[in-house]
Image 1: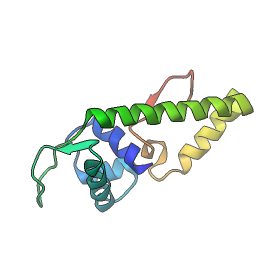
Image 2: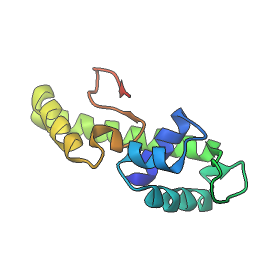
Image 3: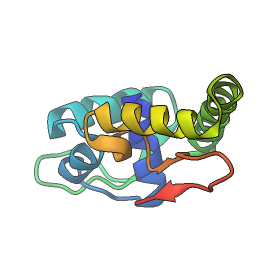
Image 4: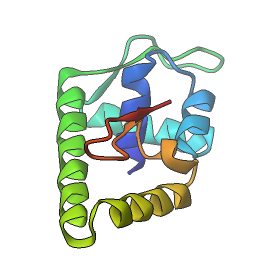
Amino acid sequence: MRHLSALGHLLREPDMSYSKLGRRAGITAQSAQATVRQLEERGVVERRTDPGRGRTAELHVTATGQELLRAGRDAYAEVDAALERVFGKQRRQDLTGLLLAALPGGPWGLYGVVIMQRGGGCATR
């Protein structure tokens, strides 16, 4: 989850500091650094500056990262649709709201753009 969260936030706001990314994703700056390092290793984020203390990292989501985000959003939409078929629209919305509220960082800890209500559009921060 934290990987998709970081990707979504970086896609919306490239060059975000680790501290800001951590706050947005509901994790510590140290965890944000470790997450970004893992994303870099997977080729979904690229750093356009040399790493170093006190430097603002210029982090950008690659085309592969954008594709991964789309796949993640599609998967969430499929689950959302399946829940709606089982529970109905209102109960699915209630369940989604409760689950998102329980995430570290609230609903925005999931990723930069969260599909909260299928058919109700996307909620963005």
